[in-house]
Length: 127
Image 1 (cartoon, one colour):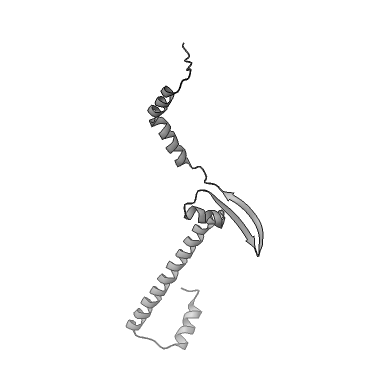
Image 2: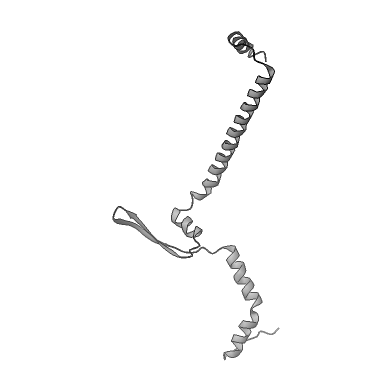
């Protein structure tokens, strides 16, 4: 408080006093402005943080992911010239691997039926 005494004197000297009701009204208004600015700042920071992950993925890959396209061909064009041409393949995720391993584990009967229908030799090691 003592550091800003000079500022306090200038304000008192150059302004006239206002009523307490008016001061509370302005305090509420400034509080609402402060809340609005703070909320928007937090929103912008979260937006910037969430967009930092998408810079690693090209726009073509992000659109393919958004549209659930597993395999796509990307052609980059500059003017009327083809600059680049490549294909996007669906990456193998851990979820796909788990599904396939569950299918193998639970569908052993189907595999045995297929083996029974085919003529083959099976070697079993004995101890």
